[in-house]
Image 1 (cartoon, one colour):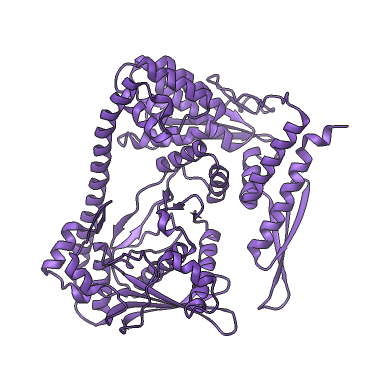
Image 2 (cartoon, rainbow, N blue to C red; image 1 turned 30 degrees about the vertical axis):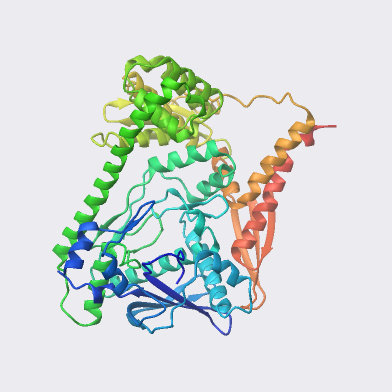
Length: 615
């Protein structure tokens, strides 16, 4: 059982065994049998529904079930406990099979309690009695993680900086005391267990509280996102911009007794079942499963499950709104104090965003406008800043125009996120519609795009890539919204102009600035090139894909072959991109593909290096 040493509510325990032939692992997860301790309709059940989940406050914890009931159900080293048991086989290539869900029992003395720091110590000590099991769990967790990433999930664990991806596609902090590989092991084991339980329930035609998540229209590819995160981690301002954009684009996951898939995790079915001590949704699902396993009457009808799901979803949404309202009220008070004290320049991006939001509800304050201009010069303007100005009174028009002109030229990639975040603040408006067109041969295409929302129509934008045309079209719509005008209905500008147009132009006058010529020394150029190469090698596959998309080139073509014995294969990957061919080798397909991407990056950057043009 891996948790904080002071934890009193231990929901789960796991065991992992490596197969003798090295072909995979056997996984076994035990979940505290809370349904056996908390009868339906009991006082503890009423308390659970009232609280909905355990509250972890800075100085105390409010247990969902109450402390006495919690202690009667929690897994422990000293007492026997009934459990919900999940067993499965995991192959070396990440395939989960043979899922079995049944009742389990953990005898006294069978569970071992360790904290996250101890996991690291156990992995480093071959003489530790838990070493073999923890080593197998770590290897299995890494295989599960690789499998999720291959399926397209944005799966991030940055233990150095303390950030993780959420199930909905956002980025959240990892508490400092659990930032070890033990955290990764637990997360991957529980995700796998929840998926296995959900799929088993689907096969058994068993309605539980499934966890569903829809995709966001403006969500980009996870490979591009991974590349952005790798670069942004070393730049606090850039990282906050990235978090702001993700916050504006993901949707909230919800509970329902029917399956609709989970986009954020890229899973066909998912549920919350591994924390019945801490979440009432997990307790509900466990009761349904136990009744099915015991051939007992179902504890809830489909209608009741639907009502329970709707109630939980509503209360979660209300909690979020109340929390946001509380902090807004607090921010308004602090804003007045900060402005009066003249401390705007020292504010971090979060606090500044809140100060600006409060200030933008009235006429501009000179100190706030001065600070906004300073942040433009320092490239510290976030998507939230732009959206805030978009809804500001007309008296903000001059500074708003300055910000929009700068952002559309310096950060065209912000455009779609600005539109998305603004529409989330105006749920009564329809979804944006896009008109598009393209001309020219495949090696030099020209794309045109235009966005509209309701009665507001933006201008046509043209560019050498579809992505850039859509980004500039979003900026055109943003400026139209700010000006309160709609552009006239016209045909695509490419209809009568089949020839190449400048790389990025909108017919509202927005034009991307060409990169400035370097007036530095050759050594400075070499330093910049070295930093660019280092950033690219942090996530080579994602960088290559992002390069092709950004420049409008055809996607790279990958070919992987395998040689050697089945238990010790060697993979060779060849990648072809434009006029370059690169190869890489490794013990897995991913390692080979990564090596090929690294070789390709060096070839591309060497070709573009300023040193090539020097005598």
